[in-house]
Image (cartoon, rainbow, N blue to C red; front, side, top):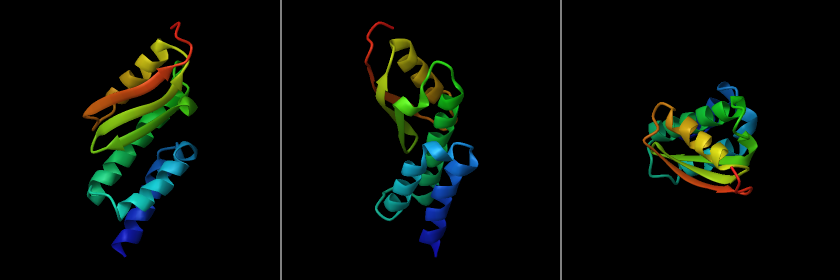
Length: 117
């Protein structure tokens, strides 16, 4: 019963933040990892909230294209993956991620495809 509750919680948190469409895949994967992850249910929930908050802020930001960036969070450490059009966009993505409560560190694996910004 506890595992079902955790899976539902991981699936509902992103939807409640107003960014459910962007993290549907992540929420589904989150349910899978609950049984195989070393993190506690609380850590998984906090990480899901961090990821969802970052994605929501990306959607609202004019410099960052949210669909170009994949956000992964593990125990408060955020890793950003994807391709962006300028160095400024990459810097802004990192800046936004760092500003989210609970983030301990941000690792950028972003690639600038334009190379001019």
